[in-house]
Length: 389
Image 1 (cartoon, rainbow, N blue to C red):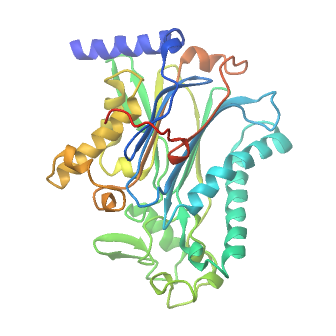
Image 2: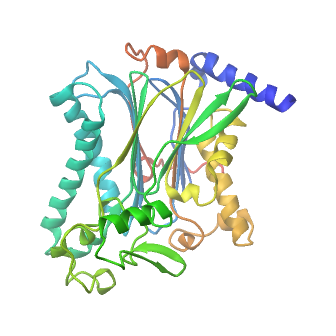
């Protein structure tokens, strides 16, 4: 009972006094080896914490947080945008999304409905996919392997006290909600995942491709679409969407023996609309690299058990400790392993924790907070290396 009471009081303090403690918060981005982090920052509706840890030879995760006007005009509508883009096969697609998706969203906001909607989000995803298809067409003669590069795409948008979650692939958005009666904070998954290891996704693929008994099958104890890829929806992966790119000079390991007439993968996002409630405390947006090692509730408990400052970095540390434990090695030894080789132990991880100040959310139509535009990862690394995680 005492621990529940402490959690409850901590949650109450967090929602009522966030606006008074920001003055002394750290505003810098830092690096420690393969870890990039911003322990605390401000968005229009509260605070946020962000961390990225690299495992691949080239960082394939990309991410961003944007807060302020969500149109091309400086005069509203106002809100906060979060994007986590988990690339595979290379960083090209996730970087492309980082450069274009939010701009497509702002364009749709400004020129069409002048308000956020499922349709505006869907069209922004579609425009991003079409833009990458055009890039593949241009680069195919000199760089055909770009046809086999893709990315998951998780987006969260908070606008007028409404939260929109859009997802392609297996990144995940989890809500931390206070249960007032007990003082506990429950982890509630808001995003729909598209991974062939989920039975409903396999059934969906089989229903969409009834004439293809090999649309999904087990390969090395993992369910894969055509034995190649685990996710059923993505941006990019053009070799599984357009048959003209599933041929030489694409590497043989990507080429299908049998032709296909319709796209095998989809770029249509699953979109959820959620009205933010007073007891909604925070949101965790993270690539699959985190969720391979932590459950929804474990991640929420870690965020809830400490201050907002450094919460994303604490999640990274907990996930790396689990990764080391699975391989029966010490956490300190895992941190010494360099990029590339590190991928044998864990994937790139991106975590953005967005805290919701209920007072600021209720006044979202007339925000007074700072304009924010920040991308996670290598583009923001300073020269100085600070203390380890």
